[in-house]
Image (spheres, rainbow over the protein chains, first blue to last red):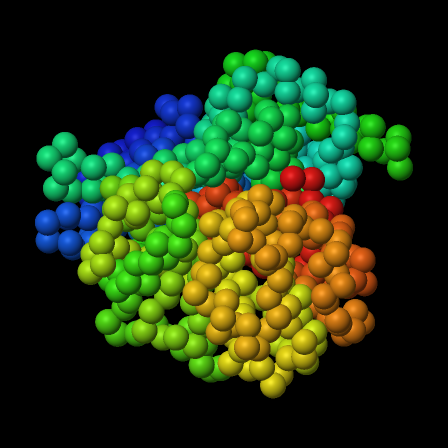
Length: 304
Length: 273
């Protein structure tokens, strides 16, 4: 038996959900889903300078997010892990705990990579549900979903993604990127890269941030806020007194790769990349990150 | 869930001027800092994040004794926005802090051995805290040395402690630009070795601060025969979160806030940054 929803009923189901909570369709946004749990800017604390009281802000609102890409769901599983270990990130989990992540996927699924529930296209008229946890179970207990014995199941293969294949051997990737430190490619990329940070903002897994204080004009209130930062930006590792631990764009750009493919591999056993291609699509300098990795791996293999 | 970003209130119980641009702050807490099973409030070498709302938050090494549970002392050089604001505060003012964070010096491994500590200028706080630990536990340590360098005699910090420390450990002071009254050494020089009598096979070294590090390593610690594996370095980096998330403090495959700030020299020697 499969739990199935008719394609034409999905709209009605979402309309029903909208009555009780905020429903966001992530397709319409260039920024990845991380933005709903780890927003580009968020206030963490409010400090009243007169009463000396410190208040931590509350974001425990239920939101439902519709996601159309398996890669984005996979990235969320990884980001959850990053935000959980070794210490849970309070503000991320405040938002994440109550949210429901729905995958609405137009391709056939071998392994469900993440989210709370996935609606998988099985034919031109129907989607079947893959329930991943209790949150997912709860959200489909309604008239729109029906048990159907042996529904028609067609195969909708995923688009070819060479990046995905490369990620399968994350050990090779880690070794190659670590080995490539003195490769000429980093000098070439340093000339190309604008150091704008866009690749990190559109990445579903990048999670660098900085924390700053903002004071009200009347000097009564101070808000401590955090915002996305990017390890490729010039001041990222600069301390007071102006010493900069990552002075050149070459060092910073290499560090970005190093984190994604080496440090992440050592920490979590996999690369912090889901081959979604966002970084390539949005890079204003036209850097093809996939090609960079391919070149490094080829040269590494020759060297070995 | 525990909100690890939320700092708690501390009162500035004492401020001491240590040089033209350096002040020591004693941060007191009403209900005392929590002691661990060994009676320590923190491990020597650990750091805290100090908050002054409106000016931000930054990491500082702890300079006081880890046995002291009513206060923590930090040494602050006036160098950026936050430190300038801290320098304007007065005794009795309240600020915030969180921590302690990271891993300190491996005091259990170090005990029973000869210890050579090397630091320069503003790198003294974590070393000072280690010295306080060693003095309380002096029976557990053999010969202990502190080599402390600075630009000028005025830049040597925590001077009031030298006499007390000097009863239990040997202190060797060195400056780059001596004045007329100066009786110590000039520069991080290899002659300092003549003063140090250790059994290299059973000795460890502790360092802090990038300034004297390479010089001390080449001219003193390695010639003394202390292996890199037994040299422990307290590192400094930009930090925002202190809990291994924000990525600012990274060095190679390590996070200074979580894996450090104290590293075995071997671990970080080959890091590309």
